[in-house]
Image 1: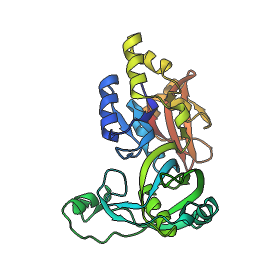
Image 2: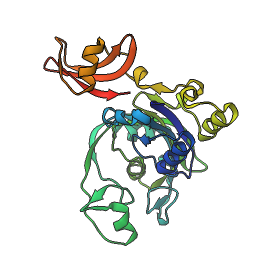
Image 3: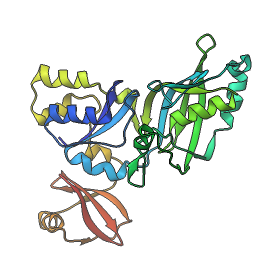
Image 4: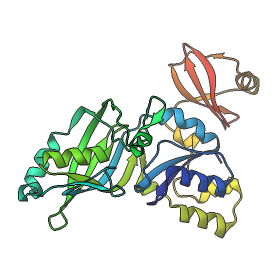
Length: 297
């Protein structure tokens, strides 16, 4: 079973928790394309079997989130898990729709963002949250990010909450964005809720829950080869490269190809789907008219 399953991650589970559960359910090698905070929900693409070799093609995807910003309180972790470290009045203009939309415009485009201290980024061999937990000060270098879309979804004046959608580049911290928006609104705030709805071409509408996956395996007692046929929107390696060109090899050339011999093809550089007798073998890469093996099933 080689490919991608899009999991809708529940709250209070780490990405590692989900990987571990799916690995046990499928008895397959499982990886993921990027962590999602334990208190966040939503799209977590899992790479299954030989699908783990797709990770090199899935590292720079843009992401879309829906978040709830709670105004009036600042927390040390930047989210609902942390301790309140500051409180500030939320003036009436903070919750004015026009004002919020104007503030959002300031964040569109390329910019530098300082990651939160409670994050897994490593500095001098240690994760930032390890410094934070020990109360140690560490200089955090800003990173370049890009915000493509920042859209107001809902406004709750009574709860002093702003719900918004953001489409951003890899490496963007929504916790930091929430704090920065609050500052622009002349108050403080933290990220109360976070749901990831898109990672590159992977959308939450194509996702499956852990419970649904468990039920498929339990209720149908399916063999590995058939499980994927009963999972909504399972993405095989062949289907992931559905828009790529095909190279058909005869059996002699296939054997050379599988043994690591580079074959000459007068083709444009790129990734190609490899077939023999109309059977999908895997992928190969053409570079300077030479074809070499890439992902082999």
